[in-house]
Image 1 (cartoon, rainbow, N blue to C red):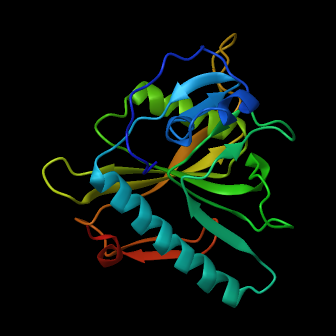
Image 2: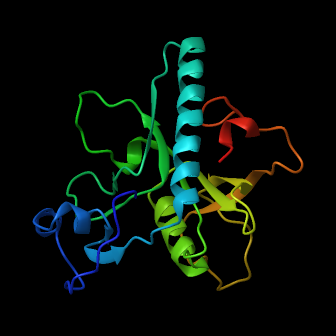
Length: 217
């Protein structure tokens, strides 16, 4: 998220949403609750924010174009917005860098995982593989159909690669007695780099075509 970094206070390992709301916004905005467990969000460099905003803007344009061609459909695209798991309650949520979801019936509703079509994360050097695998597993368990992962170049301010993963709810044949760790997982179904493609192009969850020129720093 884009609010200024502040020192982390000494908080309990678990909190409720109601307790989180009592914290100052600059602190609460740095926290996700994973089944009530306090998880601090890692802050990225300026490039993280810039590419998050650029991808959000580009996806929003694609959604609007798709809706003009499919009037029966309605999609919204946002960035750094809480996604709540389960039908009720708010003490289990994550905050993806960008997301696309079905239009909600009324304004100011909480976004539930069941309404989300795509979540995306812009990876920074501070993100560990373990952090991202755990978060990806939570998205998959919630049944979110699409997950995007964006990696950045290390030597210049540019996107290195965009990966698109589709949700797989059945698993392949495994040896007897072996079971998957997670009931659902993501399979890599597309990847794009400025070095070998002119644009990000995929038809799901709505028609997406994003020239790399729209994503320059």
